[in-house]
Length: 413
Image 1 (cartoon, rainbow, N blue to C red):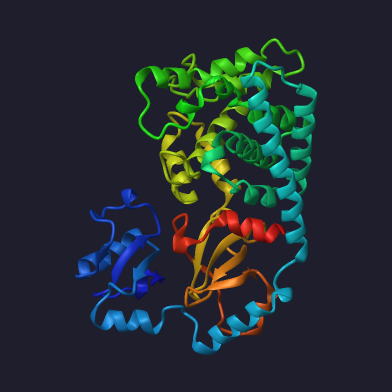
Image 2: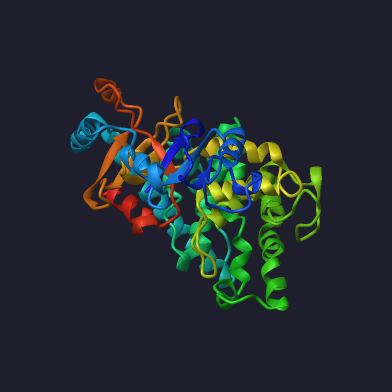
């Protein structure tokens, strides 16, 4: 088990599994190591505020110490936590479930609609722009009222139906981010229209290339890259589509350093709305299981975005997106200091360190029959002194065989 430790509590014999920052930003050579000297202790205390200790790999007196305080909560406190978890009504606003159910219906309908658009265009049909605008308006309205719910639903992913679902999720993420940036409703509609249709050119790409699990040949890669121009060319004559939305479709793979495609645009030649879609496109792609790649942990993806700025992506917007997504992104699988494991369901705008967690596993890593909601910011925790329940670690996607998509479906029933 891994537990969070302030660097002042570290001892020789403890095994450090993770730092409070990416390993690449530290001076330590290896990812995961034992504290074997006072110098290592001193270096950790200089560079970090806290680290994560692997209790199973620690040894000597340190092993006894870490096991004696795995949770930071005494047995009476743990019993209190278990009792509270069983009393869901004290912790969870039932309206959240209603919001998820309503949002899921909208998400499913939009995915089905976008899939239909791809099929129509693939057969040479025409786009009903007015209908698309109505869909976008509905998404804008939902995101303005319930942004966390829609981000939560963006985790409904299926690698076999990646293209349509990716388009919907990019639209949701872009609109949520645009809302936090203070965009007007008309700007959100232009952003949403471009984001929903940004990959529409892939309707002209053969499925055997879109879903190919092996590396693309040079010619296949060139054809894949052509989707941005193909989407623009398909829609540019339609006077009902705003120019700002068309620019998103054409330029979402352009990069600030001029090394993107299709035209190698750079800097101010790329609009702000396009820069927004470029960021969320990369994020959703990284956090999705694809036919050739497993999903990244959300924090890993956010770190990759930051590494891509300012050369490729707008650094101010990347930092804004990281703030929008939060310290613990909705949909992340997390472990609590009590040993329970769950998924972030909803953020707390007043305290982003204390979100609502949908618990999937108890302290023994046994699954709950129904998802248990734990509101880390609830006043109930004040009733027991010394019972401080908190998140200690974000786990990798699918950790402990937890299926986020399955949990969303259960909560929406």
